[in-house]
Amino acid sequence: MKIDFNTKILSALLDQNPDKAVAIYTKFPKIDRWLLDTDKPTINQLGNVAHFLNIPFGYFFLKEIPDKKYPIPHFRTIDNQPFRPSQELTDTLETLQERQQWARDILIELLGDPLSFANSLTINSDFNTASQKISEILNLNKSWAESIPTWTDALRLLIEKAEDAGIFVVMNGVVNNNTRRKLDVDEFRGFVLYDEYAPFIFINNNDTISGKIFTIIHEIAHILIGKSASFDLRKLQPSSDDTEKYCDRVAAEFLVPQELLISQVRILGINYQALAKHFKVSRIVIARRLLDINQINREIFFQFYDKYSQEEMKFKINPLQTKKGGNFYNTAPYRISRQFFHLVYNSVKQNKMLYMDAFRLTGLKPKTFDEYVRKNVA
View 1 (cartoon, rainbow, N blue to C red):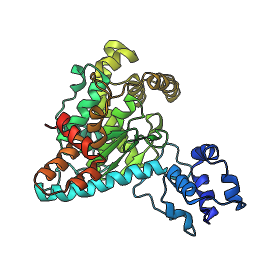
View 2 (view 1 turned 90 degrees about the vertical axis):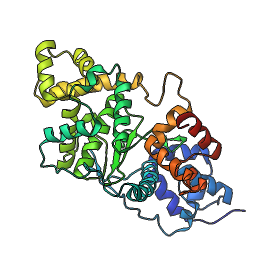
View 3 (view 1 turned 135 degrees about the vertical axis):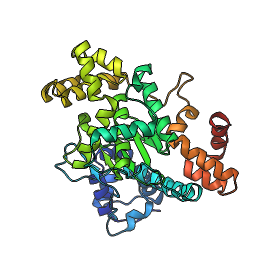
């Protein structure tokens, strides 16, 4: 049976999703006629369009698309245009908001007091002080990276230390477990949802390894000043916002302390590879720090970034893979957050939560949930 619907809604959705607009004409060859109202789709066809666009079926019968306000600030390195979040980013953020609200309620009951470091500084605090505080939170000294063999090991360590400190860290390259809904790193490298009990960090796993390492520390700095945000950090450069500039400087100082960098430059010279090996960060982060301390200029940095970011993308190391392989049960602790899963699992064991709710919050099916427990918890 064919059905009437508001064609203006479909037209507006295609305008908002130009990347999908090309593919939709191939997938639904009659769509031109639907838009011109010379033909009508069946209920199943319109349902398939809704599924393809990742929107509720009922949208097609409204007068206009609901104006959903993006709930946190989004900082762009190039911010001369209004920001319209993709459905992928919005859905990812909403998933973490739901997890955060649940975790917050549980942690208030369990802990009583908020995290001591949450909202403990302002953007007027000395950024060296903030860098030192991150070292204390993660229980790492200034030379922590020297003993770490690879970038991937460094990122894994930072995630583990952050979670041990009470910060939930999620790293994923798709919406939940839907491999057809890839997250666009040009849109955002990550975001942080601040809360004094249950702060959540999200890292876009489609980013370069250097980008991911920089993002997690940048986001921890946001937690120190009590600010939620999403950001693109293009070419590891912040937006013009003072908060972003502050968090950017704190992250850079933590990863490559200026005093140690100057000392190593005296020994090694401006040798990107040798400095990167010493600090266990990428050559891009080294170049960024050399720019910060006026050892190179912006033109040289951007030329270097363009060259080596492409190289990193080609040979991108994926911390969601292990030596055992990239199977789902190796990646799930990152996609869900190890700390969050343990909180959910313990609530189930203590009869504070139904299994049905646990499956929904973690995005796992019953068999997958049990197997996850067997491989990663038991």
